[in-house]
Length: 436
Picture (cartoon, rainbow, N blue to C red):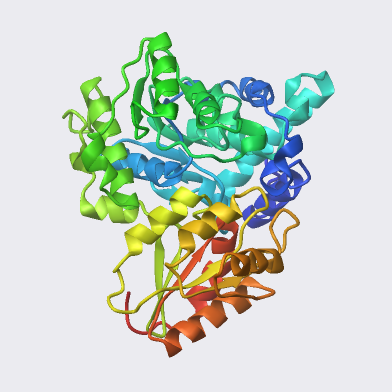
């Protein structure tokens, strides 16, 4: 239990300090990453199996899983249900990961949940059970599930951290699953083909659950998902392929979330008023309220439009540019601030950017896991693109804004949610004039 002699902020700080002593694979080279659900399962059992106290939607995918999770949670809340949402990574602060009824968890509930999960880990160490090896993410996952149980939520929308089959979140038994998209990513862990990656993400599927996916049925990845679904007796639900392919990123996420809500309604889920749940709960106001930081997030800095997005794969970068094509009138090609991890496909991303940007300002958030500004610049120049470096994200965004202002242009920052997180506080503090 939290120490009553400490203030809530002190308790939260103490819990986070203890948590940050653990291995955090989000900030380490994942080539040696241990993947297993057993530590998280052990922690949850020691906490009284909180994951069994609520209905769950489990969301996996290479792109859009965070935004889709947020839309589903917002729709369930709009239906009058009590809802928790667990997502990762956070952009600025831990509280973003655990959301209760549309609001980030407060310091008191966060500290109580983390301390309970850390105590479970300590007990596992003493008894030498699998929870003894629980990592940062294992503990945070168990803490989120504990917080949802304590809040007595009706539904929890759980975003997969990495992959699916061996992800810590896969201790749940969901009523519904979503697989948004499949792209080549995290090849060292998930495999080097779309089929292998799809197999890992399809590992969240359970007998009896509903399944909604945006992965085309006839594709390499779609065939793997469908085979796994058939083995479990599931019937995948997909949006109409031709019209879905024409949608932009945000509208694709809305379509997937809406289809999932329709499926739940068809399975007997009702709104607080007793009506069948449908996508109608996703009103424009609800959709706007579900937007997450660092996902096509727009700012206007002294009249210069600035867009932040965590896109870090070739396909997602291309989709962001497609979505923003013509969004800012005759302002021309963007100044692009870019910083990215070493395990991302830099050459593939540069191919998507070629001919569609004015100049790259290459930077780094300071982690050894990220490429240096010079590495990105050299690769861009070898590809025939105009590029320069900035030692810090702050310097990069200021350079980009100044150049865009002189050309009546706009700015796009991509490559990492960590980059977005480092830029958001600065952008909020800068003078706002005009609109985008």
